[in-house]
Length: 175
Image (cartoon, rainbow, N blue to C red; front, side, top):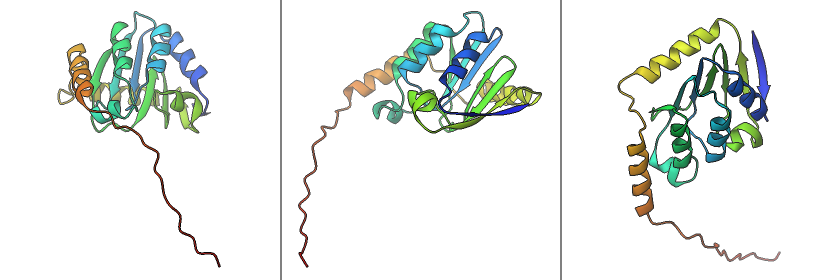
């Protein structure tokens, strides 16, 4: 059975996080601290909890993702993997899956116009198989606390750009 889901869908996401008793598998290139906190507060500590991220320093430097979010998930025993070319956003909660355009950010769950499909049939097994195949592929490295700390150290050394108001003179001819 397929159902359409539309933004805002944070309450639906939270419901499925709370209800999962066996597994929570998340895949999203971007994640923010507020969403990681929401997940950590609601995930059952006994589930098999995994997250696939597109761990690129630029994502953290420009604010699309937060290193602190990855740290929060680590604190609730989440296994994290880096898949650089990840663009997909899909989430599996036991025997239910959501495939959507929304990232694990306030925009993706609440503010942006997002669209997706909720899957409750045998198709979930196929989605879960694909997820685990990606997650278990040795070419994709684990995101460890040491990796997070090193990324934080590198980013701390990168100078921040000071934003200045751009002044443009307009030269309009009067006709």
